[in-house]
Length: 276
Image 1 (cartoon, rainbow, N blue to C red):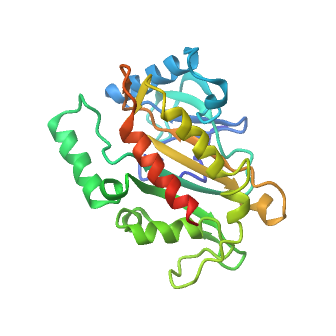
Image 2 (tube, rainbow, N blue to C red):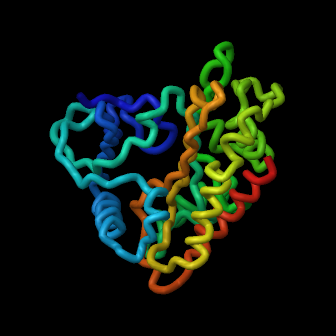
């Protein structure tokens, strides 16, 4: 049984007649292929990545498991449409808090058209991408029973400043996160979610170490997805915090050159996390 995901925070969503991702009860996430070269490029990346024996096993865990492609009914009811079949990262979480971070000070790929470059440059300049090397693309945070879920809309997120980013990173690990920006985040889950040998910071540092050497791919306009289960951490259990890379429509060959754009943005994001 396919359904629209409850916890999508960024990207094209299945609403208002627009085609978007679907999930099922077996832990699969179905991402509709874009009809232009972006769809085929993402399939090509997943196929290449899955079969590349130069990718260390400990790095593969940072990427969603790829189950191939499948023709299924599109979310808008328009008929059969090819979809990527991926791991549903949040399927095992009862109350997932999620943040999508677009990494890199430039989000366009080298072969892009001038029109596309200008479109991306405008977004990068008007967000924190150019200034910080990353930007928040979407998030949802489970707060207390009283405050519920905090899920700011895209217009608000688009205008985040560096100061807002710091506040959001604090709210992401707080029990009292809510829409009231005047409330001081308690950061009560910071040590469990961000810290520790299995926390988000440790995972980001492991990923950074790989990017300091890897020259196989350049990851333009990719995101780092942060996920943890609020239900688990609030009861004193492991947060099951996970870091995943997603969105590979603009990945290109590294050609023996280090991906400094992604690495620089990742280093900047790590610095922000480490200061919480």
